[in-house]
Amino acid sequence: MKLRYFIVDDDTASRRMLEKIISEAEIGVVVGEAESGLDSIPLVLSIHPDVVLIDFLMPKLDGIETIEQLRAQGFQGQFVMISQVVNKEMVGEAYEKGIEFFIHKPINRLEVQSILKKNAEQSRLRQSLMAIRESLAFVESTRYTPKQRSVKEIVHSILNEMGIIGEAGSGDMVLMMEYLIHRKDTTALLPPLKELYEAISCSEKDVKKETKSMEQRIRRAIMAALNNLASLGTFDYTNPKFEYYAPRYFEFQEIRVRMKELDQECMEPTKVKINIKKFLQVLFLDTVEKYSQQS
Image 1 (cartoon, helix red, strand yellow):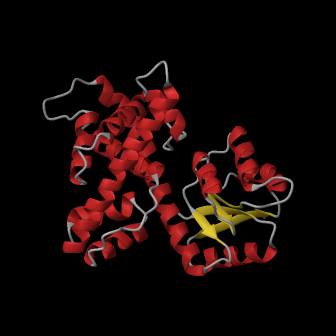
Image 2: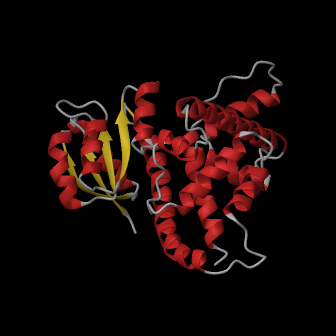
């Protein structure tokens, strides 16, 4: 089933180019468009597209503000951000709103096709997750057999595959996965990281300090996973662990950079970007899938 796209961009040429790429690559079908965030809101709410491609910089109502209003009015579809200017603050704000994919301007055909295909794969995973969640109520109500594993055991097995079970941040990740799987909210998307940190914080007096420490522990653990996978890929590009975890949990170009540095035995490795939310999102999907397979 092809995804239905809605394009929001104040540049007519950009809208035409995106529509052409989607059509010619048979990625999906464009069901509507708007030249401003303000105009897009009633259209998106009436058409209910699967994915909204939305420009970040627009007059009257920018991309982030438009997304906030659509979410507030109940829109559950996905968003892909289009932007000519990308900085840390913008990316951080976009991640907080649940955006994980960006299309950069000037628009490049290969980049658009790659991003939208990744987004379509994530959409398929979300649909599978919703079906899985329907069976979780039954799993929770039945008595576990000795062969059934707890959420903690499943997360440990995944983190062990990436060689970070001994990292301090692995304990925080276990608590997060247990919290996410047993919460009442059935959405496949993670809540904002700040909310997630606070939900599992053990400190009642200084939550801010505890969440900051938690984020640092998790970041170090994820960096260790990246280094371990890059090392595996350097020695054996066909290693099953490398093939599965590297492209799913990380931006593959970051893995490639570290692999190249390891191959050249660089003493001072380049600082790579760590996307904590993406790592935790994929860990959550993998955990739920393995957990539900026991039913």
